[in-house]
Amino acid sequence: MYPLAAFASVLVFAELASALSMRRWTTAAPVALALLIAAVMLETKGAEAAAAAEGGWISDKARRVNAVVADLRPRLGPGDTVQVLDTTEGGIHALLRLGVREPSRFLYDFHFFHDVTTPVVRGLRAELVNALNARPPRFIVVFERGWPDGGAERVDAFPELRQLLDRAYRPDVTGDGYVIHAKRDGS
Image (cartoon, rainbow, N blue to C red):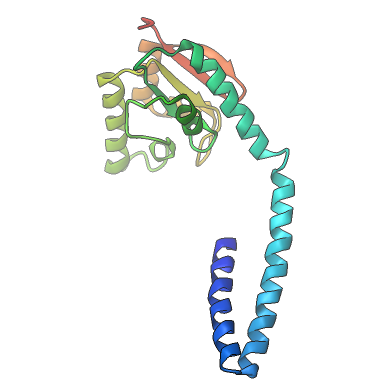
């Protein structure tokens, strides 16, 4: 709602400028009052959100990204790829900081875990497993928190991925909110 309110405020401000230039005071006064009220409400909510985020989820996510980068950097070689199974816990951010690519086109994993009987989701799952088999990444990082629900155990609900992890990977590093799985052959 806040982006909508901010955008509406910009539109209302455009109307205010027009009303003032035409000296339409009966229009300009209520528009100016509405802008003032919106500004106060948005500022108050923005300050509350910033205070809640400071020392909260933003710093937790930054800490997690730093930890993933620190755990992966010494283990990566030239041309290595890493697949992250993540929604919003910082996996892509870590890969961007490392300059590492994924072997698949999937940046997030939420679409693999809902409506799993539909042809679209079955197709997406098959595409991921095929990409991991065709271009096996050196590491697969499974983040604990998933969406729409569940933790790292959500992978168990994706049998083909679970089988691939069990067959070709081993848990290598367990961090705060993630597990890094390394290829078994080490190459």
